[in-house]
Length: 121
Length: 417
Ligand SMILES: Cc1cc2nc3c(=O)[nH]c(=O)nc-3n(C[C@H](O)[C@H](O)[C@H](O)COP(=O)(O)OP(=O)(O)OC[C@H]3O[C@@H](n4cnc5c(N)ncnc54)[C@H](O)[C@@H]3O)c2cc1C
Ligand code: SF4
Image (cartoon, rainbow over all chains, first blue to last red; front, side, top):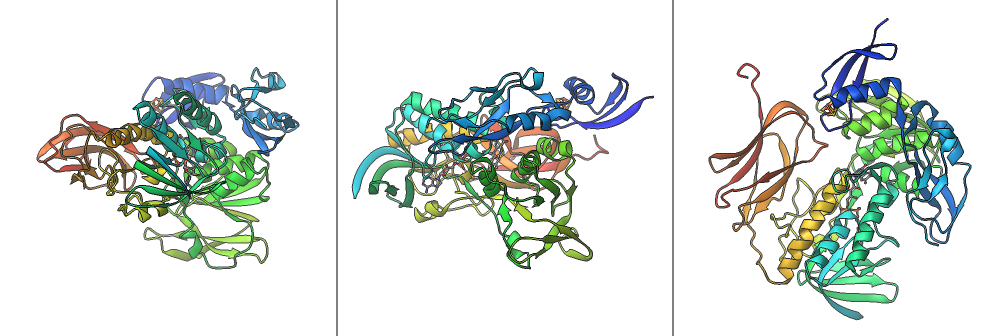
C-alpha cells in the first residue's frame, strides 16, 4: 500500500517541504521539490537514512581533557548509538593529530572514526 | 611596561580575526594577532559539530577542523601571534594595553582590527522569577563544559530558546545520553536554521514548543522543575496554560550579542540594531583606523561569512596603514520596510561597488528584495522564503554614492502576479 511522508530537504537554504508518496522501496510521487536533488534526498531519507556521528573521547594530555572525533562517512541512522558505544570505549593519550584514525571501519559500516583536533602534548 | 609598535593589531583569533590577520599580512603589513585563550580558533574549538566551511573551503568541516585550516593559513603567512594575552584597554590613538605572562604590554598600532566575537544573552531569561538553583547554563557555556571540560551537566534537560546553539546542544546532550525533554521558544517560529531544527530536534524526536516561555523556576540547591506557559502575539503570558516540567538542567539559548566593551573605550559608535560598531563599506568604525569584523560587528550564522569579512577587512586595514585612503564617514544606508539591519551602515563617497549584508524582521514568503539608489531600482530579486536567522548578502556593482541607498522588502501582490 502506498504511504505518504513529509520530508524537509536540507541540502540547500530553500529547505523544500517535500510531500512524498512511496510503496516498498519505490517513490511513487514527490511534490514541492524545487530541484531534482529533492528526489535523491527523499529516497536516501526513506530507504537509507544515515548520519555522521560526532562526539568526544577523553585524552591524557597536559592541556586538554578531550579530543573531538567524527565518523568519516555517515553511518546508518538507526545504529548511531551503537557506534557511539564503540567510540566511548576508547581512551587516548597525546600526541594525537587531526585525521588520526581512532577506530577503523567501525562496526563494519565502512566508516572510520577520526580525530578532528590536534593535541600535541 | 614593555612597549611595541606594529602596523596592525588584530584583537581576537576566531575565524574573523585569523582571516583578517592573514590578509593584512599578505597585503604587506606588519601584523600582531592577540588572543586571550591558550589556543587559536575562537568559539570554533568547542563547536565540534559539522556544517562549517561549505562556502569557503567547499568542505563540510567540524569547528575544530575549520579552525586548524585557518590556523595553517596563519602559520603559512608567517603572522606572529600571542595566546594567553588579553587586551584590556584601547584608546582613540590606537594604543592597546595587553596583559601578558610577562606583565603589561603597551602596543601602538597604525590600525586596529576588532574581532572579539560575541557573548551569550542572558537578559530576558533573568526576568524569570523563582529561585536561582544550580543547573542553569547558557547553551554556549554548556557546550564548553561538555565538549572541552568533559563534564556531564545533568540528566533531564529543558532548553529555553531555539537559537542555533540551543538546537545543536539539544542533539549533543541527547547523544551523550541525557534526557532532552523539550525546547521552548517564545516566538511563533523556530529562531535557528531549518537545517538545525531538522537534524538536531526532529531526528531525535525532541519536541519544540512555540509561542511559549518559562515563567517560573523551582528547586533550592539544584533545579527541580520549570513552569512553562503560552504567550500571545505581544508576548503576554496566558496564566491558564501553565505546565510544570520536572528537570534538573535548564539551558538558555536566547541569542548572542557582540562583545564591544573595548570598542566603546576607543570611542567607537555602536548601532543599536546590531549592537556592533557602525561601519562604512571598508568596515572602518567611527574612530579613524579602527576596523571591525566577525561576530563583534554583527552576529554571523556561518563562520565562512565571518572569515570572508575578515579577509576583506585585513586588506582594507593594510591599505589604511599604508596611507592609501583617508577616513570618510560616508552616507548612511536607509533601512526600509521589513529589514532589521544592514551592514555596512555607511557608504563611502568614493565607492561605486558595495556589498550589503542584512537580515529581515520576520519570516516572509513570496516577496521582492529591492534596493533603491535615489529613484533608481538598482537591485531586485524575488524570493520564495526569507527568514531572520539567515543573513542575506547582495552585491551592488555601480551605484551613485551621492544618492541615498535604501534596502526594503516588498510583498508581492498575488492578484497582480
Ligand atoms: C555555539 C555556536 C555554534 C555555531 N555553529 C555554526 C555552524 O554550525 N556552522 C557555521 O558555519 N557557523 C556556526 N557558528 C558561527 C561561527 O562559529 C561564528 O560566526 C564565528 O566563530 C565568529 O567568529 P569570530 O571570529 O567573529 O568570533 P569568535 O570565534 O567568537 O572569536 C573571538 C575571539 O576573540 C577573543 N577575544 C575576545 N576578547 C578579547 C580580548 N579582549 N583580548 C584578546 N582576545 C579576545 C576570544 O577569546 C575569541 O577567541 C556557531 C557559533 C556558535 C557560538
Ligand atoms: S529540493 Fe532542491 S531546492 Fe529544494 S531544498 Fe532540496 S536541494 Fe534545495
